[in-house]
Structure formats: structure tokens, C-alpha cells
Image (tube, rainbow, N blue to C red):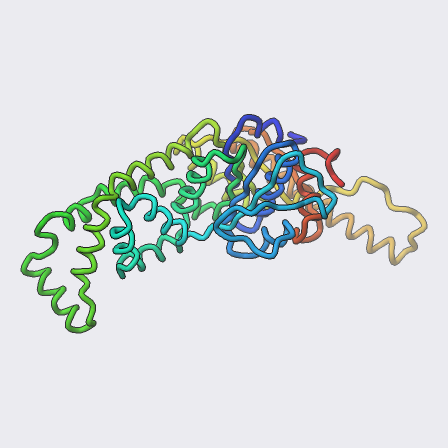
Length: 358
């Protein structure tokens, strides 16, 4: 069993924290970033969690689509490097991608004003998967950080996350978009009649909107396809590693096993396992001076903790066996959610060794 994540992260450029929901992925991602910043790296942590947990735990009022420098000195934490944090705005990221790939300002504005794009970009923002790694790619391309740490959706959604580059490439190389780019477009007799009826009923010229959208997009298809290819390559890069974050309960353990299998099938680089909220069996004997009533309550609590610890040990053993005995690190149950810098520092201490706990 590991006592520190530092050996797993040596030489890595990107760390992706993945796993079930509700097991502390966001906290783990922030604590990993904090620990590596303490060790002299310039680190950015990126979350797609719309809740305020990351901002609160870092002592910030808010986070947005651009990384913000986190000052930990007021909390008594010294860092030789720098810690930056951001929360993904998926729609803004998609808009920025259009801005970069558009051949000129006129095309960019035409796409932004198009109703089809407005609906599509909102749908992409809802799914978040491609835009999360697109943002990761942009930050990596800028080259200003030694390490990028990404928090991800729960496991089942993260499978879409892994497939997103390929699905986007398939869309831009598919028959539907090529049909719209042909001179005749969709102006066959039957389809033309359908669009005409829709225009009369809704007042929306859907055919025109679709045609303008796809023709505006036509000059960017190669750029989108190449970007999707590079984003996919980034996930498979040896400098990238996936940490599976889970908890020692049946359902989260099953999710972690499922996700690890998908990672392996996709050929993605798996680094190790972080198991949060692990119960420990009490070690000390009960003092004889407690008295009968209090002694009985303490004894019952001790038995309950011992049962939870036994359950956790069983699930962790199964996890390690199913995952091929990977590098693994356990974080004990802390008795409450992490909601401030001090709590985050406590988790960081468990992830990187007790000598760092302040």
C-alpha cells in the first residue's frame, strides 16, 4: 500500500481523477494539486463540478473558465510552486474553440448568431465531456503549467468523456454533414415540402438555418477533426495518468472496477487507486473507569466501527484483486465533508504523507 502519491505523479503532465460520484473526486483533485504545488510545481486544477465545493475548499469566492491563482499563505500553507484553479464553463469553451478555428471574424459571427449553433453549443455544454478535455488540451498547449489536474463526471458519464474525441470526429466526417455541404443540400422534393410546412407553422426557416450553419462550419471541419485527434492523443499520452478515486463500499467499488475495465479496453494510462473514507478498527482497549452505561455505549460504537472496518477491508481487497493489485492509497474517514482550506490540507496530508499534515 502506498503512503504517498508523489512517486505515481513523478514526470506526469496531466492527472485525471475519475470514478464514481460522491466519493470525493473534486476534493482529491484539489488536494493532489495542492500537494504538487507545495513541491515546487506550477499546477492548475480544473473541475467540471457546478457546485461551489472546490472554490470553497480553496478559500475563493468563485471560479470561472480561466485559471485563478490561489493564495494559500493566509492559511499557513507555504508552496514553493503555484496553485491555480478553474471551473469549466463548457459553452464558453466551445465558443472559444469556434473563435480559434473560424477563418475570419465574419464566419465566426455568422456561426454565433445561428440558431442551430446556439442549440448545439448548449447541448455540448450540457454534456461537458468534449469541452473538458478540449480545455485541458488548450491549457497543455499553452505550456504554462508543469501539471494539470482534472476532476471528471461520475464513472458512467466519464465513459462518454473517453469516447468524446472519436464521436466528434465521426460527426464531422459523417454523411449528414457532407449532405448539407453538397450544392443541392436537403432540397429534395419530400424534404423541401417538410421544411416549407415547418416554416409556415413555426415561422422558423429551419432549412436555411441548417444550411447556413453547416456551410459556415465547412471551412472549420478539418480544424475540428484535427483538434479532436489531438485531444484523443492527449488522453493516451504516457505523460497522462488516470487516478481512479472511489470509496470502500459495494456500489462505488463496482463502479471503479467497471471504469478500470473501460480504461484498459481503451488503452488509457492507469496510474493507481485512491480509496477515500476508509474506516479503521479501534486499537485501544476500553478504560475500566467509564462506568457501566457509558462503557456499554462505547463498546457498541467500537463494535460498529470494527464491523465497518471489516467491510471496508473486504471491499478494498476485492478492488485491488480485480484491478490487478495496482498502486493504491487509502484516505481514512474524516468525519465530515471538506469545505475549507484546512480540511483540504488534511486530505493532502494523507495523500502525500503524514509529515505534511499541519
